[in-house]
Figure 1 (tube, rainbow, N blue to C red):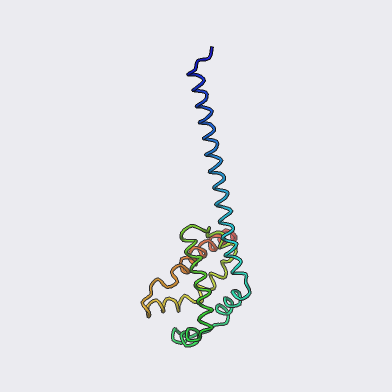
Figure 2: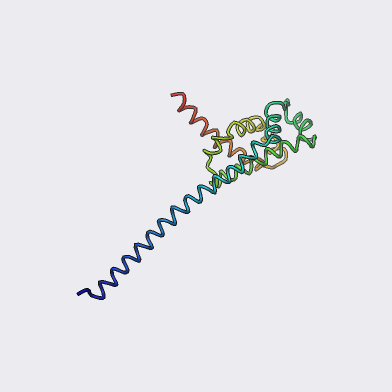
Length: 166
C-alpha cells in the first residue's frame, strides 16, 4: 500500500518541477523580450539617422565645413544659429546614443553595423574644436559620450577590418 508520506513527497516533487519549468520559461521569455525591446529601441534610433534632414546636416558638417582654427570655427559655425543648431542636433544625438551604449542598453556591435561611418566621420571632424571648447569654456565633459561612442565603434571597426585583411 502507498504511504501518505510517499504521496506527499511525489506531490512536492511535481510541484517543485512545475516551479522550475515556470522559472526556466520565465527567464527564456524575459531574455527574448529584452532582445526584442533592444531591437525596437535601436530601430527607433536608426530611423533618426535615415531622416533626410539628419543625413544632410551630418554630411554638411563632415564634408563641407572648413575652418583653420578654433576661432575660425567659432565665427563660421557657432555664431551662425543655423549652423550651430546643425552641430548641436548631430552632437546631442550621438551623445545620447553614447550614453545608451555606455550603460549597456544598446549593443555597440549593432551601432557599428549600421551607423559607424557617421559616428567616426563626425567625431574625427569635430574632435579638435570640441577639445578646444572644453578647455576654453571649462567644460571637460562636453561630448564625452560622443567620444566614448566613437572609441567603442572605432575599436569594433578596426577589429573587423583586421579580420577582413587576413
